[in-house]
Image 1 (cartoon, rainbow, N blue to C red):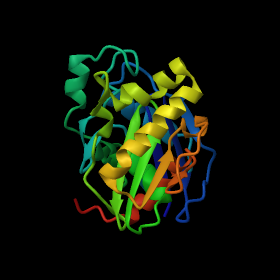
Image 2: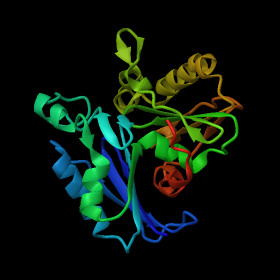
Image 3: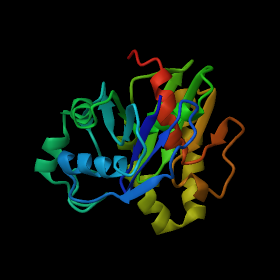
Image 4: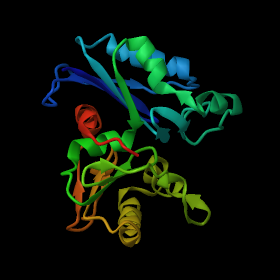
Length: 246
């Protein structure tokens, strides 16, 4: 069983094909996320990556935002005209909302497709399936996923919650802030966020990943594990073994 795994972010869309053990069968391909990005153009980018890959039997897609049973309830970056943090186009936003990504992609690829939030896919690669495990991804914004003994919990768009001075977690600790204030100050914000959310989740283990996790300059705590960004691809195999009852 070969899986085409696609990790879709605000700045880049990455993909590769993996075998049943999660080993890469081809070098990872990355395409800069184009804007404006209606769903049809998004599908075209995925097809472009797939065209550079060996044969596959199924597809996993990790998307930012609220994805419910393979349908996009909302996504934070793709309705924006010129990329993350730019003007949101109402028509693009309308086209993304309630878009049945699973049905559209199964029609294109002719294989089974599983579409989840991108943090949920990344978490599937690293969780031990014991106790309450939480995943935060540090990328364009803040991703979040929760698992209880390996069962995926209903998704929380933590990134949209206000945290300070009217800013959301996305605006407070996303990629733009890392660039604006530098790694040291940004790392202190991440540490404060983790410490502040620990009593909210009461996790047994927190995993911190995403493309910016490697920029952290501080140790977080003994109950926190930093995971590589490649987990966003590797999780594409393991999500098919998750208990998806929600």
